[in-house]
Structures are given as C-alpha cells and as structure tokens.
Length: 474
View (cartoon, helix red, strand yellow):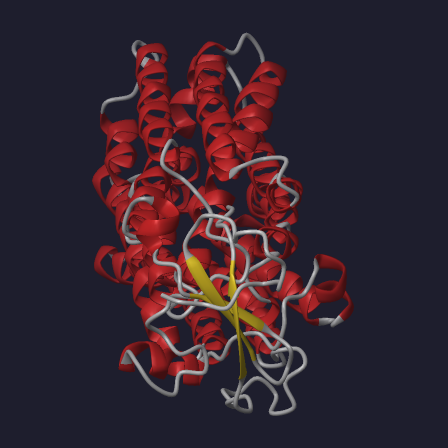
C-alpha cells in the first residue's frame, strides 16, 4: 500500500507497514492499513483462541469452589463461613487488580505477555497455598490474595485483548472467550464432588495448580496488543460497506464517538451507572455460584442432582455468554443487558420455588436459567465499555467497571453466608431476585456518551481521510 509520508523532510520514512488514519467528524481516529499478520505474525483469530484457552484454565478458581467447599472445610477444620470468605477474598483481588493492571498496560509498563506470565505463576501459588494452608490466614493470603491477583491479571488481559483485535464485532468474540471462564470448570465440579476428599486433597489441588499454570503460560507467550486506534482494513468503521455482518453489528452498536481517558469516562456519569448495575448482577451471580450446591443438599437432593445443577449452571453460564454476545451484535448491547437482568431475576425466584417444592426437574430448569443470566452480563459490560469509551484505554475503563465485582464478591460470598445463616435460603434468594430487578432498571438508562442520538445506533457523519506511514508499535 502506498501512503503519503508524515513529514516533508528528506529523511527516509521508518521501516514498517504503511497505514492511513481515518478521522470522522467527531474527531475519532481509525488506523487502517496494517494486517493482523503484519502486527502479530499470526492471524487475529489466535487472539480469540488463546485467551479462550487461558480463561478455560482459570475458571476452576471460582466456578468449582462451591463443590470443593465441604471437603476443604473438613480437611482444614474451618467453618463453612470461613471457607466462603476465602472465595470472597479471591473475588475481591481478582476484580481489584483489573484497573491498576490496565493502567500499567496502557502506559507501556506492563505488556500483555508479562501480565499473563505473572498471572500464571501467581495462580499456581494460589492452589498450592489452598492445598497446604496451616490456617485460614495462610489460605486468605495465598489463594485469596495471590490467586486472586494472578487470575485477575489473566482474566482482564484476555477480555481486553479480544476487544482490541475485533473492534467491529466484539460482542460475539468477547462472549465466546468470556464463556470459557464458566464452562471450563465443569470437569472440576464433578471431580470435587466425587473424587475429592480429605485423603487426596493435597495432590488434587497441587495438580490443578499445575494445570492452570501450563495452559495460561503457554497461551500468554503469544499475546500482543495491536497499535492504538487500530482498525481492520476490510471493515468500514461506520458500517456502510464491506462485511455485511460487521456493518449490521456496527449499526446496532456504533463505535464510541471518541477515545475517552479513565478520568473523562468517569466524568460522563455513565461509568458509575455501569458500575452499580454490574455490582447488582455480579453479587447475584456469585451468590448462585456459591450456594446452589449447598441449597440443593439442604433441600434433600442427592449429590448427583446437586453437582448436576452446578454443572448445568456452569455450562449454560459459559455458553450463554457466547450466545448473548452474538445476540447483542444483532439487537444492541444495552437492550440485551436489560433482558439478561430480567432472566436473572426470574431464575432466583424459580430456584427457590423449585427447591422448596423438592421438584428435581424444575430445579434443574431454573438452574439452567440462573446459569444463563448469571454469566451473560459479563461480556455485555466488557463490550459496552469500548462501545461507549473506545478501545485505546479499554483496559483501564473496563477495570473501573469490573471493580464492582470486588464489592459484589463480599456480598455474594461472605455476606451471602451471613444472610443465609440469618434469613435462611428463602430470604436470601428473594433478596437476590429483587437486586436483579434493580439491575434491570439501571440498565434502561445506559447511553453512549457524546452521542446526540442517545446511543441508539445512529450513524456518524461522513469521515475525512488522511494518509500516514508509520512504524508499528504494540
């Protein structure tokens, strides 16, 4: 591709792929002309496949913990409440690391590859600490702090990577990768239910840690971010021509009007609303993950139904993320988020009713709905953030939104145990249903900042084209 040089000096242009910058009338810049192979050395679909594999590995931290709780409590002589506080501390740090890690990545201090490698070894230390903890404080520091930081580095890096490489159709791709964080735990749910006891818990947890290390380490070695403002050459940023799938997705979810810094995004007022909505959704989701198996056992269901209900929840939680991500490209992400919140509310009341009726079939049906609603909102927020605020600072901006999970983890896990002890499962599930309805109400007022049409898919005015040549940096 031939392009005009950046300057008129006699010095030769720097070596590297040519690109041009497209500026629309909002002032947003799209950098086009460089292929994925020129930047990455690989096709960009690998930045979906490898994050998917890493997310598959770290899913065991959260989604299988409820199945392991009984054995962990017996082995370490902890109360059930203490054991769930270990999970809550893990959730806190898994969410808390997202924003600072994102800022370090965007400042060039921490590369995506380095974040993955650090996260891999911290994740291993998390499981080894849980296996050999002499007391609850050691487990809180090892599994909760180190394991949370490690898995959080991996999670945030993987989610943001996909949005950077697929800015034109991020819903389905983000949902696919995000889904692995749930259904990847299914084998371990059954392992912890049937093959995990006080005689083998050391070796099982150590091997799980090695499994997580290997998958995340190998995946992370290939990670690389695209340049700032990068956009695929074959896709019109306004969705007026080219790939019809991309055009349709952009019509429903138009690009952000400009690239917002974290401070600018916060001042729009949209970030606090997204944060509050995620707080509600994540709290309900974590409550379901933590207490569905114990609730099933309390209602007299056998271990197979209890484990199967959690297995169903995890599978649907994961696959639902991919489906909802794809659906959001068709319907619009804000509208899809509202539907998901309503499904989550119905599921809470349904699980409670089916459990009290001792109806196993109905219980599994609502476990299905709970799993769907309890995971589908994550990729929607991950895709909404760059939709609203752009890709350049997405790691930091999404980190602010995702930080809601560090608070919801306390309510869904540790505080959830306190509520169950005080109000019983009936009171806890009713409260979860009400919180889900509050989230649905908040989702109705979310809008794309700076868009005079209210973020409903309006197309921006025609762009102005300016050609440049430059060296690729990532």
